Length: 79
Image (cartoon, rainbow, N blue to C red; front, side):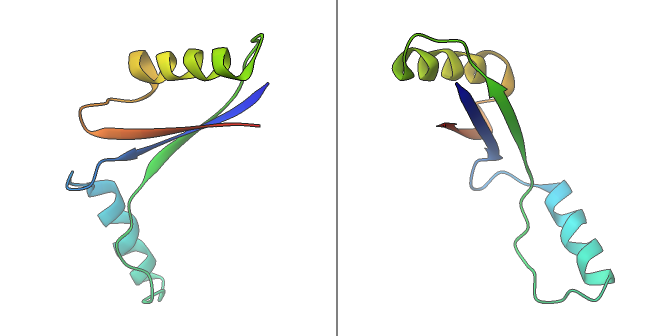
């Protein structure tokens, strides 16, 4: 099974990298972009018996390693 995990900062958490990206875009003349927030994307393959088991495995991976749940949210998409 193929899966994608998207990790983003929680609302209200400062995002200095997002601000730097926004400033860089403006320096390239791209003025229409604002509110940039950066994140991480993980594409994985999961060997599981069923979708529910795969989702539980991926959530455990997020909770233990892929996301800092104090300041980040994550979503799991299974294809």
